[in-house]
Length: 299
Length: 334
Image (cartoon, rainbow over the protein chains, first blue to last red):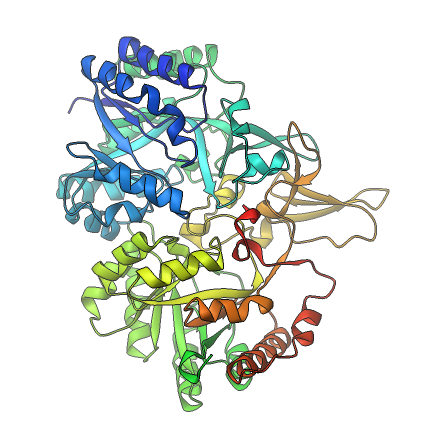
């Protein structure tokens, strides 16, 4: 099976023009097969990108990349519900559901399940498959042993499992906007200040140690997930779809490195050296995969 | 409020003794879980063996109370048999409902035990009418335990748009993160809230005092808070710690260590269509359960008679602790 690289949804509030140019570059330069678009974190941000959405879609399609439309990870307010309704009502697009709410009106149309949904076991996998899911991106906290078990079932059900291999890790969601809180604002009065932090806002302990990253209602890892050393293990399990999460630096670079690694043009130690060269200013982690604390790096 | 609207009072029990206390104190239903990873409060010394659960069902039923069995963690692949057995066991001893979070286990239970009541756990994180209706449609769930992220006004709208009962938390500890979707503990400890049923496990908690008697509370390697002399040191839960951000230093980045207390909102919640009012705290002592349950029992009974209840007992229970109406009062909380 040919390995596939996927650019996951952009989770941050980037300047719309930078956002557009990022995807233009993905279209032109990134050796990836699929790109996930659509606002996952905050319904207030979604309209900011409307002006460029169609041209981004067109450019990506013209470059031969498949487009997947992601839905919101948390549905609470009426704004969330209206955005979700709009996201799922479009015809002839392939949806990635990030909350059960998205499934209500999907009615067996083929779709994907995103990493914000809980798919931890064979029974959940089977339920989603029977409901029309053809692709499931697993939560990054699921360790190798469970990925292996899940993939046996996935193969029998003829659906694909996708693993996130690179980028900061989404750890939690809330109804409250922690970006707004840091500026003594609230979600409704946020002034979109999350746009100050293209890779999220650092949260350090009182002792000054880097700990977490705030991205609106989402809390993320400070570390950057990197499964370059584990790609072989994943391939042995039978995984062939790998997702990279966009960051302000090094995303296209990482896609090229992983493409070469998957094509056996470089080995994992060469990949590691290359990935270190161009990345956000945060250490790598791979603990979750090994059943260790997610912030840790196991050599 | 007329009689038919009188809501059920749902109380926690971590041990058979607490369960008897809650039943005797006037709880309409008790929720509890089996020993092991099948429930989301998998703490040492808590929870019920099968035999204890069976006896507790009899104890509750003999006194007109219900027992709701929480099987509300997310089994990882390769070990779902433990969860399925827990569901089968619970049904075989006659529990009144099983509280489920995992969609695979909801599917299993709805097919295997077609007449049994499924309550959707707060851990399922169903925060919208669309999500709840999906669970109703596919698994015929009879009740949803709502996440603690909706305002009363939003709860009313959800109530009007769904086909099942609503259970809402009114009192106790609150986590700030959407339940069933938080890997913060796993990020620090390697143990998962969803998969292992633990949040801030005690064996990873450390307290360190310096020469000036400042106390640093730690989860694993990470400092969660630092408390000066004389201040109360809270249990180090990541979402209740103090941190530094670029624009704000030493602040509660998520929420202050605070308890949920919706006493003042009870009439509004009932008017919004809430069927059952839930108290958090399966880890709490018998004495705590006794006073909380009896206080809420009198408060609800008074509201039902159209009287204004004396809530001083409830306020006294949280004396010295900060309390909040959390997300329930207004969108400004967000």
